[in-house]
Image (cartoon, rainbow over all chains, first blue to last red; front, side, top):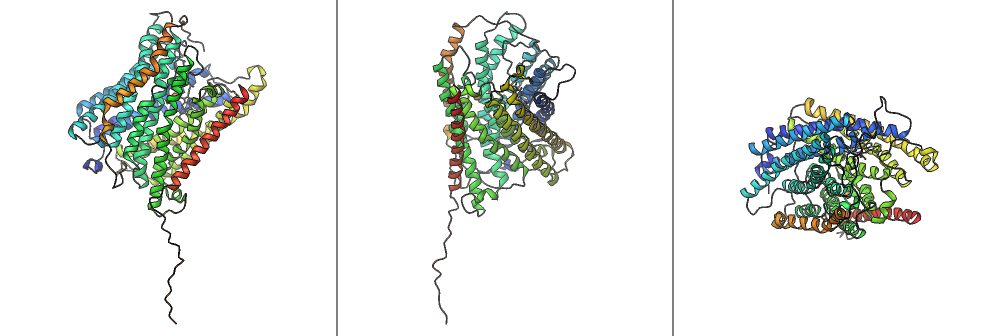
Length: 552
Length: 49
Ligand code: HEM
Ligand SMILES: [Cu+2]
């Protein structure tokens, strides 16, 4: 179904809202990238931070700014752009709510950032108790979450409005996907809101002496795993819907895409224990149950892989490709809007393999808290997701600012993607290898008293530094491209690519839009997976812990 | 001497345009890679614990 909205640009007022969030995301990229560079240099053992700046302060900056700020801002902006484009321009009320959300998120970010810079909140981006931050850090994060709820509310309101206006019709695919992500986000953030408001804030204010560490970590990971899917699903939106249009093909299957998003909604939340497999206080049987649920996420992931291969192959064959892999050559390798996210997709293959290993219950002991884990999520988040976001930036920013992606910038963008791939292969490869040899994550350089095992890690840490420096160059290049697209590129019309279904496709079944069913199952699965272990954690809790702050 | 020739043995290359055999091969390769990496770390695990 082609409606007239497909031809229209995103409304200018909505465009401003989206751009505001993307600006913050790219400022975050600059600051976080700089921190990342310092980290790899420190860990190589050949460099020390000047002026008494601590490694863990820098690491907190890096994790918070890239893992929490860049992602949340970019994702809210991108999803709002998708909804505005496919379900229609936001009403003034919806847009105002989204703007309030943006400002709350921004104020919250500044509050948290100031506390980190004052070294009052060097608690890393997971802010595990009993590490204790200044209360303004927690309050800032709360504002970020509440702000994102308002941004989400605008999306939900637009969706509801669209459904009222188009009874009995499936919603536009991108709007549907944004809605799933937003629903998952709201259910997930309830966990982090609970630990911050009920436990960490009162404790950092000194209103209570101690904190139940097990409960706070469980609430964090109840949020933490869906958080990674909150990052990933927008990339999947681009892979399922936008990439097919860019290459000139068709969406492989609308229903398959909706089905896989629903499965992510169901299985992304009741699985947080796979981050706590080595923690005491949780019965092994419940850990096992959540491991089983975790492996169910393999299904929609492989559905996605299949669907993407099929899109590419169908397109190639329509262009006359022959043989088993002839279609591969037909893809538009010179188009950065495709090629850069494609590098991201490729990186998701080793990333997925690593994920299966991490989640394999006992096997988690091999990699837990080693730098392998860092290598893993620099493939998932810092390559698959981030390169897809860059690929989106190449057309979304000029689309919104009324400019075009020129040939020259497209070429720079390709170089940027290749640099990223090279840098990350070194950095992430070295991290995986050193991790298997036992090198810990979240640790400044140390020779561990001359231990021979620690000496084995050093060559990998040097390789990490080489890769990380190349990555930093790629970040600088990306910032240059962004500034060009936002302020200097020639005026013109850049397309907002949205894939179409193949002509003989059936419309998606309406059952996918039955949120009573899907939210009902989501809640039931969460209650099933968490209620009893949670009661255990409270009833059989050890004495609470006092806070530890300013350790470094 | 005109000879009508029925060119019988020209291969009719009707590769089905909707064929997804490359996709099948790709997902098998993907699955193979997942299994090999998993088994690799599994043996490391058996070795250490
Ligand atoms: C110049 C590029 C980058 C470099 C050199 C880099 C380097 C690093 C290093 C060395 C660590 C681990 C340090 C340790 O555990 O001691 C780390 C952690 C991390 N990185 Fe990156 N990174 C880069 C880009 C990114 C990007 C683009 C993202 C996300 C969008 C990201 C997200 C994270 C997160 C969330 C952590 C975890 C922090 C923690 O454990 O508390 N990084 N990075
Ligand atoms: Cu997880």
